[in-house]
Image (cartoon, rainbow, N blue to C red; front, side, top):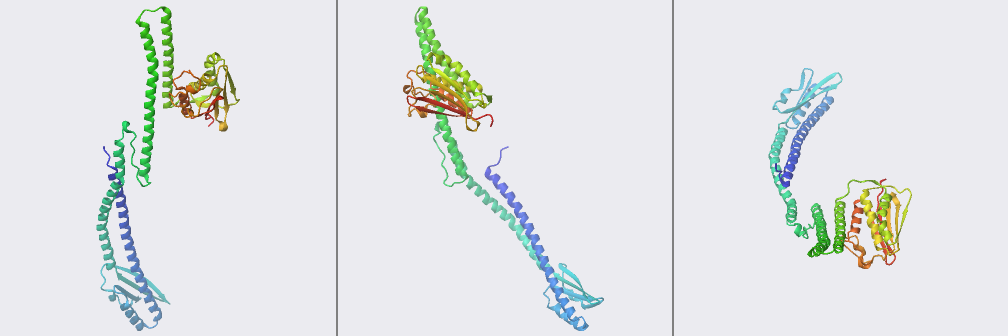
Length: 439
């Protein structure tokens, strides 16, 4: 079932709330007006009885004069008030004086004790006028309330439509933006209200999407280029070997070249898959000893270090806490940094690998080489995918430019920070700081 528009729903809620408020106000005001009218009548009756009591106490010993005073007092009372006074069976103010009252009246009786005498004072007042006022007010309210409710609903609907017009504009503008036109932005309102914050959030999201799509397009183009080159070499080598008969040595040479490029291609694909995996996030975390992952990486790359006669020195602090992570990914991270250090270290150089506990129980991994270092113009880009700075480091170093990008992706997936310190002709230090499993 399709839900009503926001403006209609707001109007309905507003009308229901206003109807409840108006109903409560009307009933409460009518009841309060009735209460005030009754209190006013009672006050008039009490004042009349008080006046009669004063006369009785002043002329209690003079029978005829008391009757005259009470009769005169009863005539001077406000119109609509009737007073009767009797002493036992004797009427001092005759009840006939109370005639002329209709059925709508309020009465009050009081016994006045003067010595051994008990005077019974009975006062009545007509409430017809007050009842007419209350009834007139009630009719006016019952007529005005629905009209006021209808007007308020119409005004509320108009206000809601006016308030939601910027949302419609944002929706229309958002629909005009597609993957091919992510550079478009929504017009931000001048007022710093909720719609401004919504528009600003949309523009920030579009900027992130544009940046991500741009990186994806660049990554796809770079990956296609990197994959095309070894495939072209493999195809060309195979076609040349098949054009004419060759001896076994030539075939072996061609197959060796094809195998080398196939290995390079396989490594590139593995790196791309690892990047995709780390970009999605690593969920299966366990508590891992970083020292063990570093030792496995060193054992795996020891032939490369021996080939260049490079000494790899390990420095592990005692009592280093475990870190939450994926053991295979952490081993890959250590291998990338170690391979990078061995690759750019000079012949017979030194590479230092250390694992230590940092402030707050965090764990740090440092890989230091004594190579040529990285120039400042290339330093901001070394973690970008497919970026190479070989011409300023060791010429001829192979690679697709994915190693450090993959290392940063793995570090980010583990909530770690990775940074590099470098000095020209003195070497570089890559530092990764992991959160501790104690947290």
